[in-house]
Image (cartoon, rainbow, N blue to C red):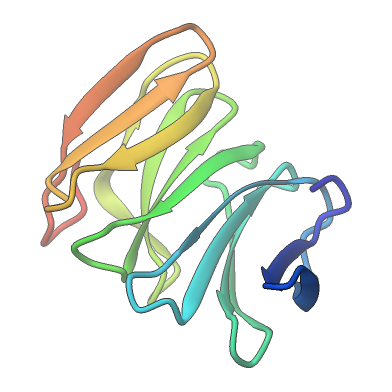
Length: 146
């Protein structure tokens, strides 16, 4: 997606929903566990929380460093938390209910964070970068600390 929009489609293929708001290319998106919310990140240095049913942006949060966000992921055990990776190698945990980054929830991986994944329990986070490194972090489910 290069125009800053996230598209949700149905079968047979037809556009069901267009979520407008990002000013630059969308680099990642993820569904919440209940499939009612979507999180997206963009080269415009913002993370957006969307209500897909109402097609509205519920919250926009800028990257702490003001740099491009390249990956985002709902925390599977606590969908109030979103994990984001940026172009300066930072992995960051954000409480999307409050719009506040978790204290102790940021760590430097290096390179550009291109991918994020959690195990089913949400206690183990994996992050990959453009230098060929995949690193794991223990995730504190209560505080968002890494």
